[in-house]
Length: 428
Ligand code: EPZ
Image (cartoon, rainbow, N blue to C red; front, side, top):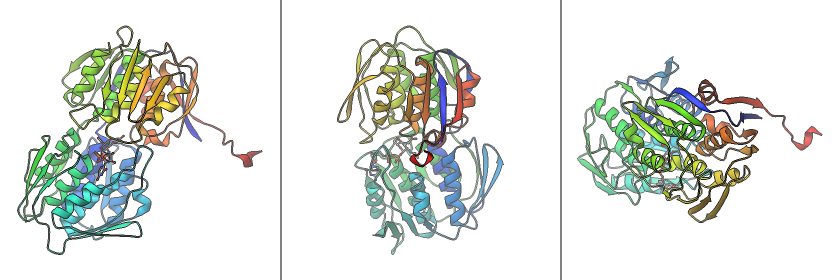
């Protein structure tokens, strides 16, 4: 079984350049369905989830050329299917991002209902309700969603219960060819939404307001055309390394993203005592004395990102004092805390709140990555723990972090991938 083993006590310094954003790339790839022909996406991260989305698109009839490690040429002129199978959706919930583009291009789609995952139920009721307002009919049977547009896609106003990233994206992509204007109110405002809207507009769509709570899409009968587009830098990958630099020493330079996309995180980290110098395309971070406690509550952008919750809890678990972390976005995103307690953290979970009492140090242990960001945060804890930390279930980390071990090695971490013996009962 593959694991990541890290020896604590080695300070980080040097420079890391992050990749394109996982949470944009996957949707940009899905959006190519709307533009028959060859779209070139650059700054694409070489991560497991991108490979899964590639499989989804190929299953639909697309052809993908990997021009280089970070450039995909996606030809969707041959897309002639509209069914996404369960075995791909179960691997990656983001496969549901093809729902909107398939409806926009074909007026129909069959997508497996995504199951839950380690961080929550991951429903898509807001996607469905919003698309129904655009004239989409749904039948759900045998775990599949059958979507159709008996009277075509009709522009409408949709107010989301919650500023859902996925629902905003599917509605945006489905409405580019709707008859009339669609307004998405209480829309998600993440930088990845803006990146997707930019791609769609470059392709010939008419979208205004991306990045604000109200997005307006004026439907067009013109077929969208393929383009070349550079994926926005990954603010969460960057935030993960910034947290590590602030915890394990620095100066660590993290480039390849827009620091404005991580503004509240950087301001919180400064309040916690980290020394942050902002650059045009990144930051320089330094540990600067003891970590100060602070309270965090996760919210849709520009609020504190849930994808930085585990990494920040790791910092707070070593603060001089107590902090309260409130998770408002997912219903079950504190598993990381349970693993961190194996390393000596003192955290009390009360529903959506985690009371984090700072301790003086972590002790290295074998721990299990609960999800993508929790796994990265356990490696982060291992960087400063006493002794060795072995993080298992590293497939979670490989979903969203390209070259996680070599990047950390390049800035001074003593870290490696190891193969642990399988201690199954049949081995006796
Ligand atoms: C995206 O997930 C990201 N994933 C997540 O990143 C991120 O945590 C999340 O947005 C919030 O920022 C990708 O972009 C691939 P939501 P998404 O729809 O679109 C509930 C990572 O680590 N909800 O904003 O699924 C949902 O269950 C991942 O990179 C409904 O109830 O997030 C969740 O509790 C993790 N019904 C909350 O809303 C719906 O129809 C936010 O979900 C849709 C969502």
